[in-house]
Image 1 (cartoon, rainbow over the protein chains, first blue to last red):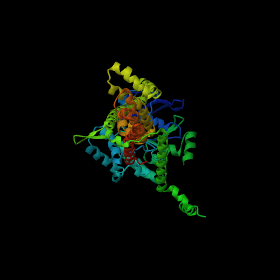
Image 2 (image 1 turned 90 degrees about the vertical axis):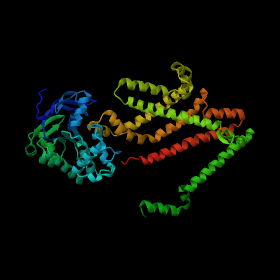
Image 3 (image 1 turned 180 degrees about the vertical axis):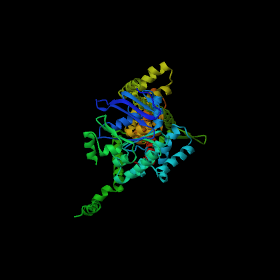
Image 4 (image 1 turned 60 degrees about the horizontal axis):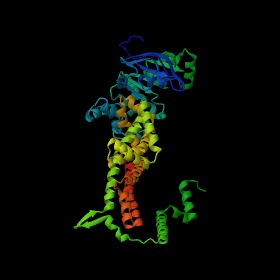
Length: 249
Length: 278
């Protein structure tokens, strides 16, 4: 394990994850991500992108290797895992909003329970966040009354509620109708420009080109190639990257 | 020919107007009346064959009596109150045991899972009657439990086992994304259960849970076997004293129905109110 550098907010060192049943989802993955960087992870389905992302906030436990987020080392310790989850927000492909709570209650919940805020101050911040994602007028609606794009924007606001230092996005636009993809990408771009550190699993080339600092191309649980978006899309060095890019273009 | 659903149905009714009867409430009412008439006829037939002599006029005093100008509950109503009391206490305990067992079965603790598994199998695979006797004659005296306490224990352990399976089914039926979203927000396991999982699970399990609550109320009749004066025991005593066997047991059945049917209606209302939009 290398020493901790202050300017790296996420350090992933030689991480492997095998599921029960023997599927090796991630194999010896290493990467370091600086503060305020936006990293896009691409790769064919089953290449381990999502699993890697879920290892970063402890939803999956890597069985070997080390993950350090903002100086906190992720290991078996439950308290440290909770600490990391407060620093890391996550947005899912299928939104995963809480259907029995209103939009406002969805965003309030973590502030009330984790930060022990009172209702008024939680609501104040929630409304600011909902304003930011452009959906404050739906604060008292239930998730089922919203379109997919609106639900995903609420999910982003919810993930931001604890003011995390890192945001993880797991294919945030893959479950959306085409006309709703942009409203979500716009919010993500706004977030990137505000200086948020972001790790994004996506196939949206336009987004990667516009806001990402670098792109990781993954296949078979390993890094195939990394680089700046312009160079990796224009001149991929590896055959596998080229084949994949041809397919999604 | 039109293929659109509504007009096809219309032409269907026009072609065979008598079919309409099968979809009207009138048919249900007619069926119900027919059922009552046939049932009554069968009962009168069998009591006539037995030479049974109906004496309904002797019954009301076991429901209510007037003593010194005041209305006093008769033995059946006293039994009803006792049944209500033992049902209430057992229900609260059974729900607690059921939820705790479900959570333990879903926990990471090996011992917790093992113990709850053993508890479930033992309780579900032996008759309640045996459990009531065992708790009253064997375990009760060891633990110093009285008659009421050991009956409550037997009932709540029995119903708790069934309820725990209902709770568990409700919890695991939720999409795992709900857990992941809650965990990724930094919520503890306790908060996740309290704010995210259980409120959603409860709405799903209300219908089967109501079934168990009704079972529990009916099963309280077994405590009469350890001489607790619930509705069933009062009915047995009155029937033995007066030979009003049919009258007493019909009324007793009606009282149990009067307890459980409103419960079903209340829960039906709750289900509609708490319905989660999906």
